[in-house]
Image (cartoon, rainbow, N blue to C red; front, side):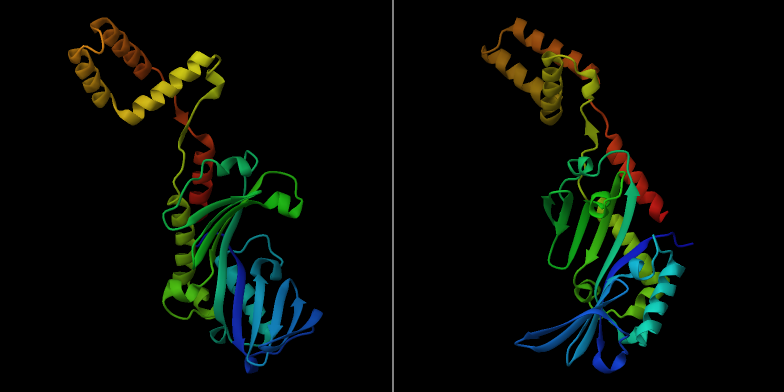
Length: 285
């Protein structure tokens, strides 16, 4: 069974003769060096028409007036779109498609961004209430859906955007393709995989346990020891002691300090990352 998910923004292009445009709102005529373009809106969709083609773009979810779309609901929404504009889904080429999901989180969405690090396939760029990752053909975005729509509560939106699906799939992708479970599942699986490829801070300082500067300094020492490695440090202490730059007494005091620090627990699992991982995985599984 395919789980509920959202195929959100679509941008499709059709031949000029392939469509019957219903009555539009907010009609505008735009003149440019490439000719005349007529634009308007229909049920949260933007429709543009020039002498060569028609472009329809917007949220499939909003067009269908749904909070989310299962696979069957997604197919129904596409069929409704085709019926409304009188075209065959095989005639519509997909120029952009977004996969997205909104989660209720325990904390304010922007607090999670700090723990989401680099992604080897994208450039990371925080901006105001959002965290974005992008390259020339795809993008990822995390943002505060509650603030965007003035809705109370902590609502974190995670989107994967195919800005140039032709290059990703190495072929032209038409609207009929996402009516198949194979392509639909590809989008969902890749949506999850791209999230898991983001480097995350999985352990944090238990600040509630740190009451004094010395306790924080001990944590920083332990953090440094973890990076250097006990074997390497122990070898350097031996070399310093044998060369006479470190006394036997001070070397022992340092070793005793390291031993005490290694027995203490300075780190704890990052519950915020664990929360996000669980939500992402439960959406697909």
